[in-house]
Image (cartoon, rainbow, N blue to C red):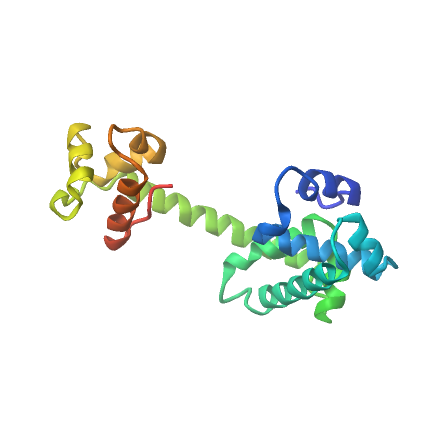
Length: 200
């Protein structure tokens, strides 16, 4: 994994693109880390705000929220392994020194990176196992428990088992005649009620 990206690379590749980064949870976190790192190196709130065409209040908010998320990810990293994503972003964008200052501990080091990679590998294994179980699930769908429109769509397409659903995937199911967004919602609600993952 590349960990020595420059600030300019990061800004153009991840932050200053066509999306609205302040509306994306992961980007909110890394934007705040970026602003904090710049502030630590001498940039004022006013300068940071002008670069982003925002207000100083926005900068303070992003700094506060990002620091809170970083501390939460650090404190809950063992009980909630999914937080490894936020910690990984700190390493990837080279903000380890600033993050260590915020936390007051020397957490971001080589052993942290190794732990993050292990959690990622384990998470990927679990996702693959779940997918394999879904694709091999020959249990029949209880059509009687679905709305009539959904039942008619699945029947017309000769879909009767869960593995057929997951094998086709969201796009192909959504493309079935009369299978609108409401029908997809009803189908996903049914899948969740059976302890299965929704189509997405």
